[in-house]
Length: 304
Ligand code: DON
Image (cartoon, rainbow, N blue to C red; front, side):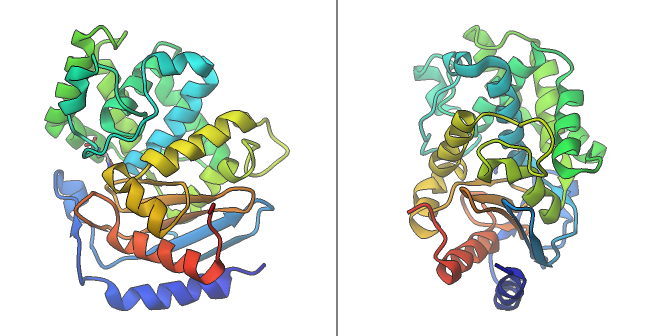
């Protein structure tokens, strides 16, 4: 199927809505100065067909979308042992919330809230040069080099008081093996990966291919079993306390970031990435969600 006319149509419908709502993340200057009036959409089918529209080639800060890729690496390293330190339940709380950690003895609810992603980063650090491993994975998935935005990483470190609190709290429960500073250095860098919608739709391609490499002909990224589980976590936890509403209104496994990107998976068919920097109250891209709703309504593609 040729998806290009459909993505052009969605771009045309979204553009008049730009600037009409939502707020660009403002906790660091590098994100606060991103112009809100941008929208991009890109997809890649399991067979390798691609389509894109709008600002799909503009790089942005992928932020929490990176949690997909670090989780994939940690599952590869640890298999089911990963779940000794991290749960698989939606939190129903904002992504940077501390409240559940105390009563749950420093075990984060899931790998997509900040505490969970910090715990994943700790596990990766125990197994070698995690930053290099992450960059190598991203380059392999995209077929081109991907880099960290040094300014974003430095600002995350300078202002990440809650993340320091989360990491220190987990450390106090004996749930982090590595030094808090080293774990957060990895976490802040993964959040600072810079990629476009086109690159993210390619990179997430293994999630609609049962873990096989998006381009084929190369080693599998992960197993079919792990891929199914990553997609399940995306559906239940990938958009924080909006996950129920996203499942209701879109019905696809999604992972969002405060840079305004959302990656979505239609298993066995395609991966999508939408981007628009203005966020709703839950920290998810307002028009990104709207664009995914349009995509599902127009194609009927959903896991339900
Ligand atoms: O860790 C943080 O608080 C930021 N780097 C935000 C990460 C993120 O994208 C969370 N949610 N969407």
